[in-house]
Length: 136
Image (cartoon, rainbow, N blue to C red):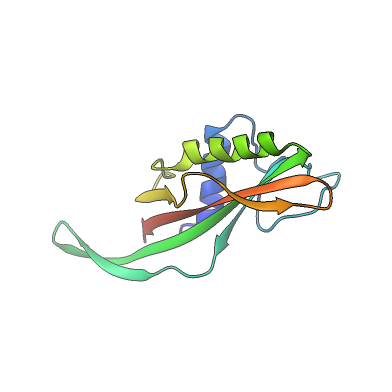
């Protein structure tokens, strides 16, 4: 069974040399800066919802088609708005219409990243919602 958050994170890791799973790219919700989580990093997690439906392919009925949404949140270094925005844009360029292996599509909803504001640490937060589709 597909795991959209893990699969999108793996795709980002493959496409962008500056991001590595477990180092500065994490699945799951945002975590505070620590010895294990740097200030400048990316978090990837699934949002609730999405449809499950049957579909026809080549005249035969497939068991299920899944639509899911994955959120990617970029946290910049302190007081570095431009770097956070640019990292978010590079993720957009790497993922939009370039789905992970086994997926039918990966489409980012907005052409520019959403700006979520600034944390108490001075980090700027940016993000995208990515609609993915796969069958199982």
